[in-house]
Length: 353
Image 1 (cartoon, one colour):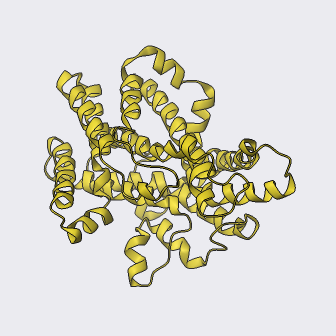
Image 2 (image 1 turned 180 degrees about the vertical axis):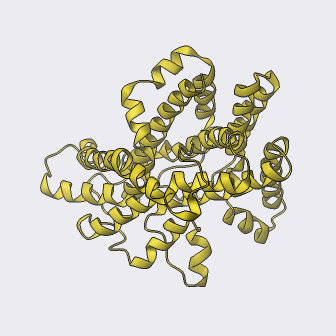
């Protein structure tokens, strides 16, 4: 049953990545760089940033599953690193090698910009001391995930699972209190730790508790946490062109997630091969698509000015999905196996979740 459920999560990952790439193609960059269609589609695709919140919901669920399969904090973090690093390594090298050809809005990156992604150290922690920016702005959510892993692993193996969700809620409540009291220093600290997103992880973790134990209270708690998370403004959302924050905009994500776990028609729909493929390539596609997508779209608009605006990003997206498939299908596993052969990694399970 667990493997079948994970298939539905792959379908959710497919929805999440499609939402994100449409947002970046039509709503994020067009407000920052000249495009033939400007920001006319921002109101149509501006909601796509919520795909990241859907990824956080999924992560809260899956990380609890992984914690149950690990015996120590070190093993848990080792498995998460083995899950994320191989694709990050290959994707970073692809981005760096192809940057001169991709017409990136921010230009050709320096070698130092490989550092934040390959170490999963938030570039916001490095730039104040003269460190490099990330290769891609989208890497920020990987840094948020890593902070969540560190917190979840520490709490789970130190205090027990029952304190994990409570700790996530407590951190989020402290952030809200700091905002309400106008404590700017603490607000900035919580933001640097990505604590404003912790309620999404908590909702996913509560859904996992229900899925494992079938306790009604856990399901209601998961829905409640998701509803509250969807009602809180996302840091930085106000910078999106033509995109004003609307309370409960993320509520459909919570309901979709709940339906994926409980409703057979939703499970069948999420098992559609197209969504499963998008879910399969979601991680490498997320890493490589941002600037390359808009850069190639701009080049295509110059080469084919007759092409309808809505179709301009589709060819670049198809190419990037092909590259992402190569990374996911043919690069990730060999890199992971090579890392597992290293003496320091021999004690980590070969199939991280």
